[in-house]
Image (cartoon, rainbow, N blue to C red):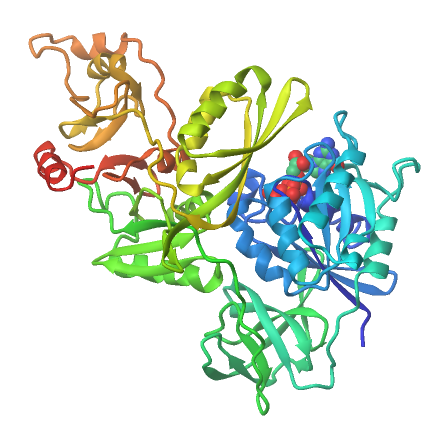
Amino acid sequence: MQKIRNIAVIAHVDHGKTTLVDGLLEQSGTFGDHEQHDERAMDSNDIEKERGITILSKNTSIRYNGYKINIIDTPGHADFGGEVERVLKMVDGVLVLVDAYEGVMPQTKFVVKKMLALGIKPIVVINKIDKPSAEPDRVVDEMFDLFDHMGATDDQQDFPVIYAAARDGIAKMDMSDPDGDFTCIFNAIINDVPEPKGDAANPLQAQVFTLDYDNYVGKIGISRIFNGTVNKGDNIMLAKANGEMVKGKISKLIGFHGLNRLEIDQAEAGDIVAFAGMETVNVGDTVADINNPVALDPMHVEEPTLTVVFAVNDSPLAGQEGKHVTSNKLRERLEFEMNTNVAMKLEVVGEGKFKVSGRGELQITVLAENMRREDFEFSISRPEVIVKEIEGVKCEPFEHLVIDVPEDLSGGVIERLGKRKAEMKSMLPMGQGFQRIEFEIPARALIGFRGQFLTDTKGEGVMNHSFIEFRPYSGGVESRSYGALVSMTAGSTLAFSLFGIQNRGTLYIGVQTEVYEGMIVGEHSRDNDLVVNPIKGKAQSNVRSSGADEAIKLIPPRDMSLERALEWIEDDEILEITPKSIRIRKKFLTEAERKRHSRKQPK
Ligand SMILES: Nc1nc2c(ncn2[C@@H]2O[C@H](COP(=O)(O)OP(=O)(O)OP(=O)(O)O)[C@@H](O)[C@H]2O)c(=O)[nH]1
Ligand SMILES: [Mg+2]
C-alpha cells in the first residue's frame, strides 16, 4: 500500500490557507521548474480570483520523501462553512491556521469545533508572524483556551505548534529558532497525522465529496476511498444518499498531482481520486462494490440559516439582456446547484418561484453572480432568516459577531448593536487605538448591518461573524431607516431631473439609464418612500435643453453591488438581476398597487 497522508487546511477567512498550500506545492517540488502558476494557485475560479477568497474547497496532491500527501484547501468565510464540514470527514488530520495578530476569530471557533467533534488532532500553524503587530504567544494561548473551552481531549489539547510566514515560505517550531523552510510542516504532516485506515482488500467503499465537470467525460465525482481497490473500467454500484442503488461503470479514473489531473488505472483505500462515468452521481454518494454494496454514513451538514426567493424576472425590461429566462431553466440551474452543494436547499414555492436556503448572504450572492455570468436573468427577494420550532419554542439562528473598531467610535457602534438585540460578551484593547468587541446577536439583525457599520466606523471597522446555534426568537429588531426613491415612469434618465432628485437622498443610478415605473433609483433621506420622475427634461420650449443638460453637475451615484443591494432591500422590494444589470425595484410597480397592498398587509 502507498504511504499516504490526507489533510485539510482550515482557518478563519484570510488567515493564509491558500497561500500556505502554494508553499507546500512549491517546496515539495510539485510545480515543475518551468510551470507557470499564479499566486494562490488553488483559487482557480473567476469569482475567487476577483475577490481574493476561496469559495469552493479544492484538493491537490504532492509527494514528499516517498509519501503522497493529499491536501484539501477549504474556504474560511463563514457562509461556506458547509464546505469545511463535509471535507473534514475525508481527511485524517488538519492544519489549522490562525493569524498571529488577529488570533481566534469566529470561523476559527467554528472549524475547531467541527474538527474536535470528529476526533481529529490538529497541527496548529500560527501564520503571518512577519506582521509587525504579530503576537504569536498570545495567539497560542488563545488556541489553548479555545480547545479547552470546546472540550478537546487531552490528546487533542496536546497539539503541535508551528510558527509560519506562509507568504514568504518560512516556518519554524519555536519563535526563537532561526527562520526555516516548510520542512517542519512536511515532517509534522508525516509524523503527526495518522495514516489512513481501511483495507485495499475489502469491498470498495468511496465517498464523493465534490463534483466537477469536464466537457469530454461529463460529471466527475471526487472521492475518498475508505476501503477496497478500484480499477479503470470497473463496474460499481452507486449507493445514493437517499438509499437508491444505481449500477455504473468507472469510465475514467483520475489522480491529482499539483494543479494537474492525470488518468490512472488503479487506486486503493486511503487515497483521494476522481471517477468519471456516473451521470447520476451526487455529493455524499458512496461508490461501492457491485456485488457487496455497503453505503457509508450520509454526510450531515448543519442546516441553512437564511432563505432568498429566486423568481422569474417579470420586470418591464425582462428578457432583453439574458439568455436563460424561463422558470424551467431557472429550476434546472438551481437543482444542479443543490446537487453539488450540500449546504444549500431548494423548495418550489409557487409558479416560477424557488426558495433557496443557505448559510448567508455571500453564499447566495455568489450563486446569483455565477448565474449572471452564465446568462441567466431572474429576481431575488430580501434574505430572511429561517425560523423553526424546537421543542415547541420558536427559534432563530444566532451568530457570534466580532468587531474591531477605533476606540473613539466604539460607543456609537455598541449603541446601534444594542438596538439590534446584540448582547456584548467581551471588550479588549487590540493596540493601535482599536478595540475588539464580541457579541452574540440574532442573524436577522445582521442583515443590512454591514453597510451601516462601515458608515459608522468611516470604513475602518472590521466585522466577522459565524453561526452559533438556533435560540429562542428575540422579537423585533431595527431595520433600514430610510425609504426609497421610486421612479413614477419609464424611459431613459436625464441629468436635469436627476439633479433635482439628488437633493432628496442618494442616487443609485446615473444619466441615460433605462428605468421603469416602480424601479428604485436611490435612497430617500427620510423614512418614507418618495415617488420621483427621473426622465423629465427641461421645459419643452427650450430647444437647447440637451446641451444645457450636460453642464449640470451630478454627484456620482452610489454603486450598488449585488451584496450591497441585497442587504439594502426591504420585504416589499426585489432585485432584478441580468447579465448586464442589477436593478432594485418595488415588488408592486404602480403606486396604486402598492397602496392597495399595504392596506391589506400593514407592516
Ligand atoms: N503578512 C503576511 N501575509 C500573508 C501571509 N500569508 C498569507 N498572507 C496574505 O493574506 C491574504 C489572504 O491569504 P489567503 O491565502 O488567500 O488566505 P485564505 O485563508 O486562503 O483565505 P480564504 O480562503 O478566503 O479563507 C493574502 O493577501 C496573502 O498574501 C503571511 O505569512 N504574512
Ligand atoms: Mg483560501
